[in-house]
Length: 241
Image (cartoon, rainbow, N blue to C red):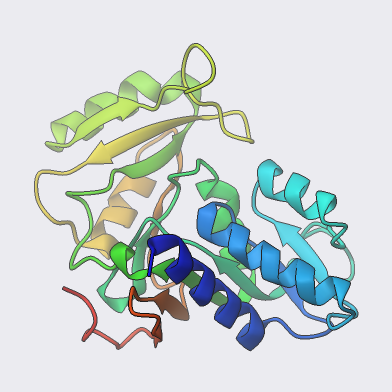
């Protein structure tokens, strides 16, 4: 079974488990979240999700939801008042105790806001995203005020990290987030303590948010190559390698 099929199986199971009529749903961003959107759209069109409200985590996701005619709104909607029932989103890395790196798609600030607003934040992924630690493999993204870039880069490099401004693929110059900020991608020389590192990064002036999602995820729905879908929780270390 391909990685894409594993993602799809996990996404469909997550939707069938957590998305019910009347749910206030945070809709994630990225390739796995696209399968979540696909399944939600099918159930919505079949009339099974009456009363659904969807809060997207990026402009791209909002556009896709509107194209699918889903009922899109924001956290400021008086029917929501800053609180969601569940958010389904992907992750770039899932480590023990469901510590995550997110933000490969550049939506980490809004993704963290929506995750924090949710009674349940559920990660959907394929098994390749399970890793024994964070910091040395997939780069950790930071959303940064443009005027703080030189300071942030200097402080990160003084910490021993490799850090660079993410460049746009379809434009000249850096990636600009939906909120008008830049992204700095960071790789550390050794595995990090996610709790301590999140605190340290948050203390750097100009860093608006990091892609470390610590103590936020309630569960991870993970698709494996053989077709099995596994649900991991905070205290599920066995599947990490």
